[in-house]
Length: 96
Image (cartoon, rainbow, N blue to C red):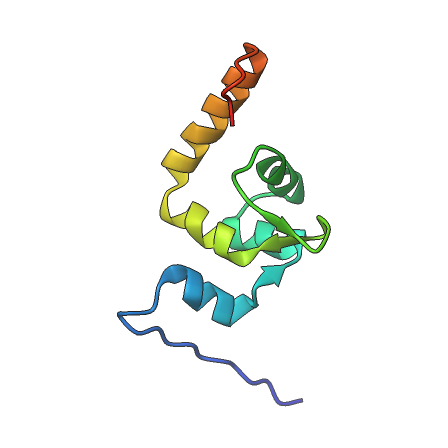
């Protein structure tokens, strides 16, 4: 059996989102998203539910560009998700 390895290179101008979309495609499964982020599929589902990641294909896939955005700024995206959740809990109408 012959094993081949695909080597991908990125240029300085290529963004993380473009690079990841080239490597994984525009969408990936929830299990693949979990492997990319090093978490469980349950965590991916929660991240989609609270807006940290975007779903695609009627909720069956995860948008790879949203994974790239999360990798770039996890603290900011986590903060916004917590803020939205707190505002919804407190009944604020301008939560979104």
